[in-house]
Length: 317
Image (cartoon, rainbow, N blue to C red; front, side):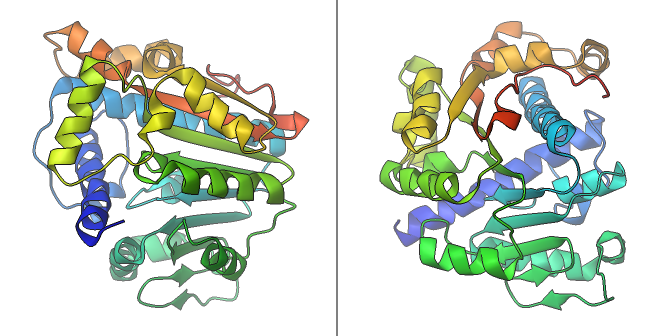
């Protein structure tokens, strides 16, 4: 990937964080930690805020379904995590897991490590075991939380970084990607997915990204990103829900499912969704539907324990 394109892809972390910060500021969901990474944000359009609400709540839904089945002795690997605050939001909710690992380009993790070191609130919430953490310019290691700088396409380096983060291939593991794979060449994505499928016996892969990118609106999205220097190198897998599922199966995962965000939005808690929809007036519902039709969640699993996960609210949420 050319340097200019790499910088543009890394900048998408800032864009997503700004959008989340704007929605949190208006009360779409609670996140007392995002402001520690993004200080301010311009107001976004209501359909953008609702789209991010569905994205964040969809991730939470799949994580709870995963934890319902495997318990707390598990791992979450957040690939291309950026400034995501999931680790601290789970901690605040009283959810403890054995290991939480975030991976991203070193240029991104160096900024995140800097913000963590500056915040006593974040440091106090990290379980440190013997009372110490290991911090470098790009990596952060504690007992149950790790931030590591790595190129996901460099599998040898990735193996080393996962070992440094204490990743245990025998533990049930959830992999999370949000608008990450679409920026990586298809062949490299295939190798990455095959690598994980071959190493982890019980695993769930949760992927959020674009879909239906062959239609007019999808082509417009592609053109807008290209104008900002972002080439969607992995867009072939984003043609349809079937293409999203197929790449996981071809990479050795036991099975896969996918839903566009219209279905995910509808599957979220109706009472919470109703309260959220009162925050801002949405003039044109069609704009939201069009946006939601072009994003999706796809999941893939290894092991029978996770083969029945589908969208919908867990019983105990």
